[in-house]
Image 1 (tube, rainbow, N blue to C red):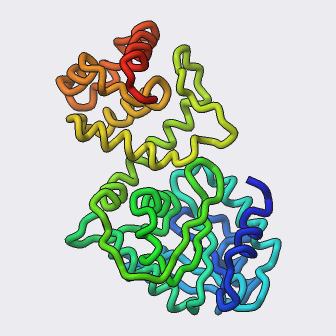
Image 2 (tube, rainbow, N blue to C red):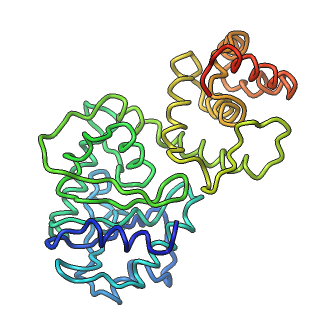
Image 3 (tube, rainbow, N blue to C red):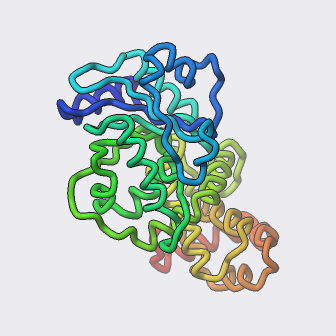
Length: 311
């Protein structure tokens, strides 16, 4: 990611009527003296540039609600130093489970109207169709929505024209809104919201494995980004597949997914291993996995490759 990604994308996709906003989440924490803290932004831009997003589940705790910050109104250029600091924040928070910076937004809406729109979508994107609230604006959750809803997300985002969000793999991605008829949120998207906390734990553990010596890890990520592109979607897919095959304990899901990410993504297709995991006492999958050893993993991976299992 270069230092100009956010500025370049704003210039490329902003309409004349759009304001430029930053969304921050106080629940993630930010030092008062940080240039992007609420107090620093209020001092630089004025108190009226900051609007609280009335998150439905935090209605009585306004100080914990997200804050929408207007960097620039229609026809005005956002300060270059604010965009640069926003981008640096995205880089420094890449390894965090919870991010303070939730991304830059382009929208023709006023700050108050946009805050209400973001809050309303907390109900739309809940993990259950029958009710609940999802903090969908968190970068990881929005990344999961983009992966699980594809083009149908655009009409739900609109009139947010573009959302530049920091991703799980360490780059800036853009999710676009577009006018259109509202679509139902598909079950898989709600499932992803339900699994978001576990996915965050898996991503954190995955990052740690990249720093540890692993004798046999043919799929260990060695690319230029922190994790592979679409890392959150991959983590969700592995967790979902394991649940479908009878693995339900959170610790077991994490242990299995880490082995799949470093050895072979289709380990559950190896019947002896799958059966052993299903028979194991919940929470003890690690004991099953450790028992195999590097030589056995090498043979299993070779078998899966030879029998045509896709990697």
